Every structure is written in structure tokens, then in C-alpha cells.
Amino acid sequence: MERTMQNLPTAKEESLIPTSKVKKPIFGRLFWAFALLSLFIVIVNLLLVIYTFSDLFYMISTDEIVQKLTGNLIFLVLFIAIPCVFLSVSISSDIAKPIRQIGGSIRELVKGNLDVNIKTARRDEFGNLIGLFNGLVSRMKSVRFRDQELSKMKSKFITVASHQLRTPSSGVGWGLDLLLKESAGALNEEQKQIVRICQDRNLEMIGIVNDLMSVTQIEESDLYYEFQEVEIDTLLGKIINEFSMEAKMKNIGIQFENKVAEHFKIVADPNRLATVFGNIIENAIQYGDKNTTIEVAMHKEDNNILIQIINQGIGITEDDQERIFSKFFRGENALKLKPNGSGLGLYIARKIISEHKGKISFYGDKDGKTTFNIYLPIHQELIATKTKTEEFLEAI
Image 1 (cartoon, rainbow, N blue to C red):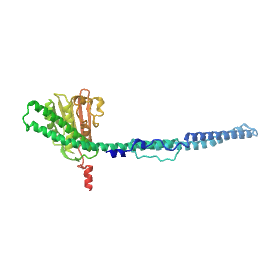
Image 2: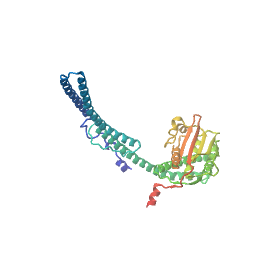
Image 3: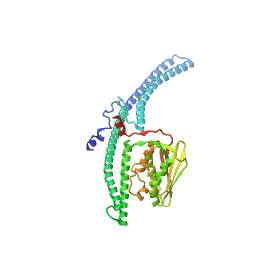
Image 4: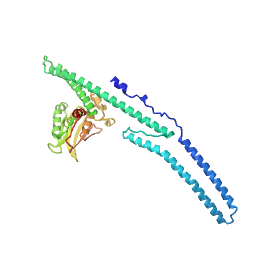
């Protein structure tokens, strides 16, 4: 890891200041161009005036004088207008070209494309600006590369740490089970209660470790999906039954309403969807008010199945709502009620639903009522998504 850190580019390696100085300032060139044009106009005007007045002495009629003055005036306008137009087009083109180049490159940057480089031989202010822009893009590439390398290192650390934590946690869980079964001797009720508390904390830690592993796999595109035909109502019923005892201990009911059809099938990964539904229902129980009911409903909207999970509880503050699906984020109300937690459940849920070409959203009101909407497409090809590891092994 230390060797990798040494290879990362530093901010000093890239300079935003171009090495070449401004040798031909564009505004100086503009000044001299307009100065010469003005001098040219003055000289032509003086020559024309001298020529006109010299002819007027030989003209007797007024018509001849007017005709002569009109002709000279038209000649003067045309003689001045042509170089003015030529100079204006030349100057506007000279200024507009680098502006268009920089504008087009900025649009590419907005799209996330950093493979932009403006080539120019100019040595004026625009050349200096383009040099600054190219230096900025180079720095952005360096920062992106550094972030990617740090992200890889972080993922590797999380993977190793999670594996190292999972083994002793499993051993602790096994030992606590033996204690509850009184395999090592009889326990009084107070001792059993202490063991149960230890079991709950150990399960929480295992859950956090599993979440960390899932996030690492998601970010490395190494999370396997096995798409198949799934009876979505049956899957929801199974998840509800798994959490029914936990809900009952808190005097919370769970009501399921199927508004589509019995045994309705969609193409999905049942294990990944079970994770999504389980995370949301578990949150509804943990942060829900006692003596309330969690409403789970299944609807059909156009070409999607909509699963709604509604509960009444602590709610989500308005400031937290925009960040509720962010990684490691936990709402203010959730932290007050339950300080422990990974803040990864909803982040993982959104990523899984996204891989199913679906959408997840929520709505919370000021009274603590929270509604999660999960949209899943009805028609989807049966594709078994392979991880990068499996693709590599198949290639070998």
C-alpha cells in the first residue's frame, strides 16, 4: 500500500501556469490596427477634400457641384467601408475561434470527458488562456486518477478487514449459542438476558460487515446477479414472515395487499430483491412507532410493478431527505434513536434496484409517515450478469 501511495501523482507535478509568456498581445494588435485604419481614413479624407475643392473652382452650375460632391462622397464611403468590413471580419474570426474551442472543451468537461486538449500556436492572451485551460484539465486528470487509486485501496482494505472480522464474529456467535443452550452449564435468567444482548450486538456487527462487503462488490462491479422468473408476491410474503416476530415484539403489525394478481412473475434476482425489501421493512420496524401497522402493497403501473412500503414513525427530516440514499449516511432522527448502524442499507438497495433497471424513491411528511416506492420492470431479458472475476476465469 505504501508503494502504491508513492506512485500516486501529487499536486506539484502539474502546473496551471503556461511556460510561454504573452509575446503578441491581441489588444495591442487591435490598437495598432484601428490606429492605422483611422490614419488611413484621415489621409483619404484630406486628399478627397483637396481634390474636390480644386475641381469646384472650374464648375459654374450648382448641379455640377452637387453631382461632384455626391460622387466623391460615395467613393469615400465605399473606400472606407471595404477595409473596415475586412478588418472587422478578420478580428472577429481571430477572437471567436479560441472562444469556440474553449466553449466546446468546457461542454465536454461538463459531460465528464477529460480527454480534451486544445492545440494552438498562439502567443497572445488567448494562447495564455488556452494554456491555463489545458493545465487545469491535466490537473483534473491527475486528481481523478488519484481518487480512483485511493478508492481501489479503500475497497481492498474494506474487503480484507471484513473477511478478518467475519471469522471471529461467527465464532463469537457460535459460542453465545452454546451458552444459551446451556451446553457449558445452567444460566439464570439475568445471565441469559446478557447473552441475548451480546448476541444482538454481534449480529449487528455481522450485518455491518456484510454491508461493507456488498458495497465493495457493488463499487467494483463484482456483485453477482442471477436473474430468473420470480413470484414477486410470494417473495414479499416470505420477507414479511421473516420479520413478523421482530415486529410483534414492538407491537407493530405488517399488512400485505396484492393489487395485481396471485403468483405474478417478473424477471429478477430473488436474493438481491430480498435484501432490498428486508432493509426497508427492517428500518420500518426499528424506526416505527409502537402500535402502528406497516403497509406493504403491490400495484401495477404501465409496464412496472410498484411495491409500496408505508410506515408511521420518527420520519425523515427535510434536510436529510436529499441524502437518504447516500453511502454511510444516517438521518438525524435515526442517529438519536439508534446510534449504531452502517448507513449502507438504502445505498445498497438503490444500487440493486438500478441493476434491475428499476427505480426507488420515497416520500416523507412532517407527521412521520414515510412511503418507499420501488418500481420494477415487468418485461426484462433473462440475463445472468457475470462478475469481473467470472468473466476473467471464463476467458482463461
